Image 1 (cartoon, rainbow, N blue to C red):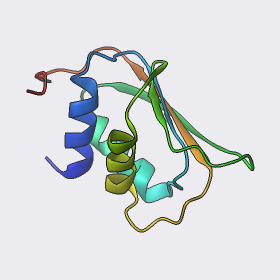
Image 2 (cartoon, rainbow, N blue to C red):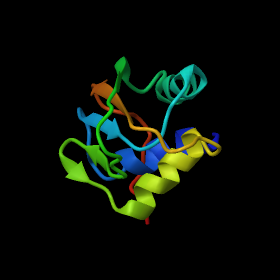
Image 3 (cartoon, rainbow, N blue to C red):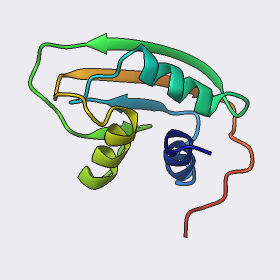
Length: 106
């Protein structure tokens, strides 16, 4: 399990597959990216890049163009990097294929 994997499972349970994930307002370091990759390993083919921006802070998370609520975005950001200062950074993750064994959250 693990909190990162569980968060990814919950997001995927929303039916937002084959999507681009945008996380902004929180800096992710190499360890965060590695943790996210490990959580996805075996369920998705993963292609990722990190893009930095000097623009204003955005605290939204988008999955395939659908925006999650502030609480959902904050929760995932906190799981990935709980002690991070707010810095503008977007993590774009291409999720190719379908996750397996993911049940809808109830």
